[in-house]
Amino acid sequence: MKIVALNGFKDIQPGETWLWRRVEETARDVFARFAFQEIRPPVLEKTELFKRSIGEATDIVEKEMYTFADKGLTMRPEATAGLLRAVIEHNLLAARPLRRLFTIGPMFRHERPQMGRLRQFHQLDVEALGGAHPLLDAELMAMGAALLTELGLTASLEINSLGCPNCRPAYREKLLAFIAGRSGGLCADCQRRSATNPLRVLDCKNPACRAEVAAAPAILDHLCPDCAAHFAGVETGLETLGVSYQRNKFMVRGLDYYCRTTFEFLTTNLGAQAAVGAGGRYDGLIEQLGGPKDTPGIGFAMGMERLVLLLQQQEQADAEAEADLYIAALGAAAVNACLPLAQHLRERGLRVTMDYEGRALKNQMKLADRLGTAWTLIVGDDELASDNGLLRDMHSKEQRAVALNAAAIGEATGQ
Ligand SMILES: [Zn+2]
Ligand SMILES: [Zn+2]
Image 1 (cartoon, protein in one colour):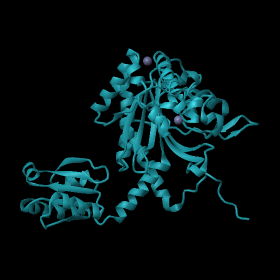
Image 2 (tube, rainbow, N blue to C red; image 1 turned 90 degrees about the horizontal axis):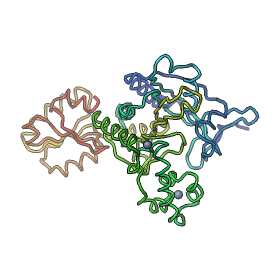
Image 3 (cartoon, rainbow, N blue to C red; image 1 turned 60 degrees about the horizontal axis):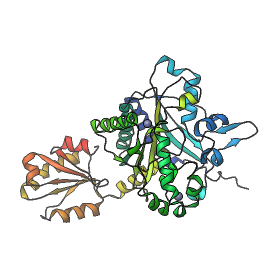
Image 4 (cartoon, rainbow, N blue to C red; image 1 turned 60 degrees about the vertical axis):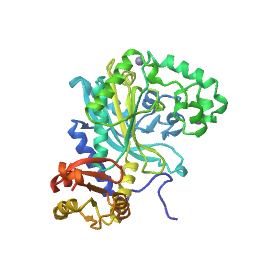
């Protein structure tokens, strides 16, 4: 009889390992530039660690962990707990009060493979320990955004605050009262968990639940002054760093230990909107695990399977594209100016095409779409006058001004 891999466990085959390496190498490079150091905790830990950190009354601990019951050991279902255990055990916070660490590796959860979930999946996990300042939160999100950008992926960032032990209980009461009047319209899961964890009702994906909670009170309107100031600091930091984001009042975390800042990187390129990464602040957790008192922390994890899938999609789209860049030159003067530019870009290795028939912009954009180009450069009289063309990213639909020379356009398109 032939022995095959376990259900939910997947071989990463020779044809795809290069994409995995690209994700790992880009991550190591970006994280290093933010002065994060790598740590590699083991995948097996005492079950008690996950019960104490993730919380006993969570789906993960209740039904998703791979536990060797007779030995009290568990395959890690996420990276934070083991990483913090290592930091505390080796006293890493004594040598320096702020530690920036990351780890890359497999996690294990007893998920249902028929839903397309893997039981061994891989994460990039990043933790900044010992800092409570909102700029640290903003920096961490900027690093996540930088990684996605350098991988050539587009994702949006959504943020929220979960408050703190001083302000969350009062909000929880408000939310409970709101939900109590509507429990009849909620799904069975939400009816069950609304009493123990009403915040989870907010991010239920069930359309009926979404409709019921649409008008729910937002925690952002019920933060204590300290939490409100912290959240404002995060937003200011993101703006200063040029990281675009949106507030999402329905974003909560499933794990008990999160507080204040919570965030997700989302993509629409995998069918429905899906998170490629998520994280948040967990100021009480280090102490809860026996570490130094009042040691704040914040971190995020990104799913490597999703990143690789997005890269695969992009590779395929690029391979099918007939050109990398379409130049939409509007008018004779623009065509003349763009002819040598196209030549210079081709010399740099870019596949460039343009149209000489004087078609309207709308028609030229349709043509670029049909060619499958990743980029379109729009040049009309205004652009000629300012010597700046409009470069449109055909995947994200974002446009920006870029100087009309091969070096600037080559840099902007990554060539
Ligand atoms: Zn608070
Ligand atoms: Zn629900």
